Length: 197
Length: 197
DNA sequence: TACAGTACCGACCGATCGGTAAAGTAGCAC
DNA sequence: GTGCTACTTTACCGATCGGTCGGTACTGTA
Image 1 (cartoon, rainbow over the protein chains, first blue to last red):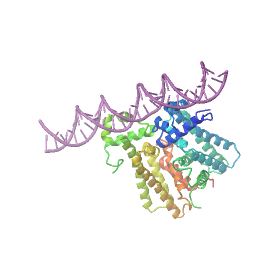
Image 2 (cartoon, chains in turn cyan, orange, green, purple):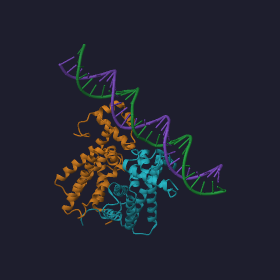
Image 3 (cartoon, rainbow over the protein chains, first blue to last red):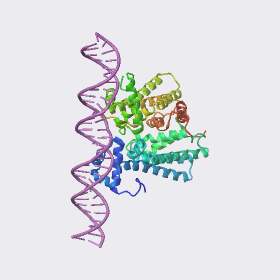
Image 4 (tube, rainbow over the protein chains, first blue to last red):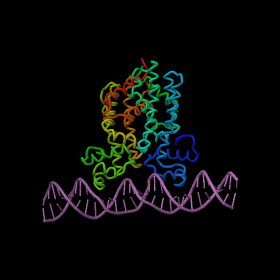
């Protein structure tokens, strides 16, 4: 398993969580290892016992949740489903993941640029695979004739991506709407637009 | 006029541009003053002759373009126009601003967290005013009966915001579609959704 | 010629950066 | 007891951080 995977000691897991929270608030480069010491109560050496570098923390955070989303998306694509229903379900999964892991998703979407050159390609590939998942879900609707002809075009995918990603900015777990309700409104909007009928 | 306003010497203006480009690529905290020296060819002292602090650069970048967008939006709101047409025009203006000032808009949307506590309120107010402009434009359509009843709800505004803001990630001046074409596709999507008819 | 203002320079400041090293401690196996 | 592993602590490293400083060169004005 990779950095963000299952084989995580509790201490290591807590470290990643604290790091994500700090990175989300102050940004990756705006967060010092001293901040992490304060947040975890651990000394410098202890932190480096559990984790090999600050970059490792960032890499783990930026890859784990994206991987999960891709996996779920692929599973959904294999199921027999109505296209609009599949779209709705994936939207719910994504919004849920954002609300449930707000700090991690914030860092994942916002601090990509801080991933060191050497491993950025890997992260970018993940982002591409995630985007492709949305594209496939859209395409399935076009194939079935329930979505308009051009609705799997690159720009529609970008629109859908933007619609969902921006949620990390404003969506809060204690907000008035739950993740499923938010996702449903997103999907209703995507499906029929804002025009009065 | 404020930091980003009109009263700018050419040197100061170039400094802000270079800073925006660096911040956009490496992030605010990931960019050092040494980077800025290299990019501008100026010495440390010269930079601080034109600008009072690194924070000032960030503040200028995060406020100037937002202010312009708000002004244009307010102008649009005062014009007699069909609601959908007003929406289309503002979308075009926003997308155009993003393409034309990609580094600045990137920093403006992404590095908000790096604005020092003392001035963050001002920047946040600006973001709120910008969001309200979109809300007003939407509300006008609801009032006129051309947009659905609930289409000025907070979540729809967030959706529209996300749709547009995410463009700084993927939109490029040399891309296949010009800003107006992109905006038009956005608006068509917003108006009617992706469902086949 | 004297002075003011603008633009610029590079050396230097204390603080903080991410990361390392060595020593120590607790628990478990034998 | 000894030895091993897991974990922690503290002191410390060189590098870089944003920012300041005293000083130089050029320009316009009187």
